[in-house]
Length: 215
Image (cartoon, rainbow, N blue to C red):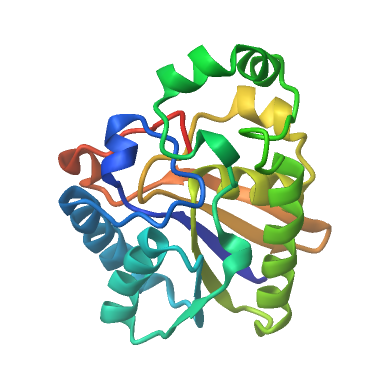
């Protein structure tokens, strides 16, 4: 029974400010580093054999905290990047709503539209993250565990693709993944199942971890 832990990065200044990051290469805030250290101490006990990360700095910095306490090497993979939000990158949620009202209405209706005119759909993210997932799983032994350090919407897209959930329905049913929280995917004879969602360090609330609606 193999297991994959899909871990969202720690908080950034853009997360705290409600700014769309997409694939902007932002860094963790001081709070984000502390969140990552706390989470890493928990994840170090999970016995992972591989640690694969989005190549964006906020994910790599998060993964590096686990590498420091586990001895694992961080393996970068650009396929685990956050959704590209095109012209929305660097804008606040209010600015996007004001400038792109029709796109926002479409998203609220559950439509998977291209983000920011030049970005990606969630279906695009699901395809590339699933390819990365399958490559990692192929290299795990029968009872192996891997940790994937990635991003909020990328995690949702990947989890849905792995277990066969409709992304639009999952967006309504699952609350947003908090900074430095993770999802547990476990392999069963009938396929992969989502065992846990939005798991974090026991003292995560002390670091002010909150869910944010923008990627």
